[in-house]
Image (cartoon, rainbow over all chains, first blue to last red; front, side):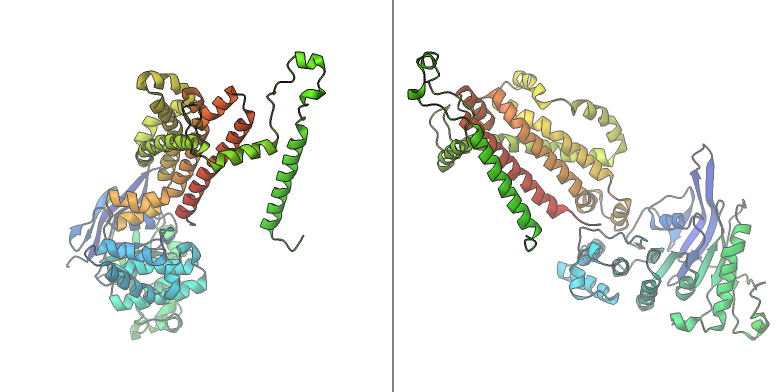
Length: 301
Length: 277
């Protein structure tokens, strides 16, 4: 089996627990992300999702283990790995447009100023920000608009890997829906590789090709890798009618509600690989399982 | 009254307070008796000669008109126009202040970015900061040997601390998110410092600069009283020695006006660098 585009190998994070001992957040985590794949990681707070994200972004160093992208080991932050932070992280003293041009200019130092502005304006328009709005300061924008700017900034740079750290966590449900649609629209145009954290199961099903499920910490593991067997293009209203939707959703709810606790705190020595899970009710053999989402067929690849 | 805006009402109250204050001041100064009204005893005890007293505001206004209509005359070392005196003071303040900023802001950056530098330098700062700037004067006069340079040194030493402490604090308090934005965009150290940390810390730094210029203007008056020669502080002391209280009151007012102008210049700067999160 060839190595995936992004490969996380034996990643372990240990923090001092403040009482002289050590706290293992997760250990020996192994998983991969293919090029052009949209992978979402789901798990409870404290399981180390954000730590994994920071390690992928190069903002934090793991205790041990490596992250390889395109065969090369990741070390330190890079323009090849764009990040959309939960709290938007726009620079408040710059206008909306300048918040994007600043990133584009860093990515393409050889471009003329006009080129940078044109490229940035194009990406802001893609998330619905046009006209006078782009000359406003972030403080004059709503939370949803700020996150759009942040998404435009990340996409405008064409990173090889886009990291989204709970990008819609601070938004109200309606705004969240609109921006999810916009994100899907931009993403389908670029076929960007995306790795995203979320708490929201429906959001994960709508956006992801594959969902990684994490058990609770300490000793958290990436326990399962659930394939989302709902064809694209997806819409918020369309996916709920798909026969696989509730089967997958129930599986995720059961995992987060019960099994994430049952599987937690287990120290293991070897490398941990997530168990691939494929739920597909559209196939004839699965017809009799419609009302009982568990036990599930776990197909090892 | 309700038709007036808040600002208009405030302005009206200000004018009223000014008029009442000036009137009370004018009326509280007893008029000097003319020589003919004095008894022989009073004349013998010297009451007839012009007596130094606190001047009424009308006299101060006349003095101000005289001085301000010809602020730059120079009639020898003890008789220079108010404009020249204030000019000397501003020159000293700005020179000492600029030197202090040139040291304090880069050093503050270093202290703010490096916890080791902060811990290492903090004890020195804490001991040096509370020293009255005038206490340095004898040492400065002895080592530097030049009274002009000593005055500038005193301004330097008094205005360095608020700038240093505020810069260090502002730089250390820059949100990690913004630094992370710089890091994920592969900005180098210098670019991060100029494009992210400096603008992020600018409001705090300028607040320190504003406090410093205020202190520098307070200190220059006292320093010039000590070193003498020129400057608004020397002017006040010289007029006291001349028992010309009208000039003393006038120059006190001028110190206030110039101080206010320096402060509002920095207030303007503060507004341009401020941002809302």
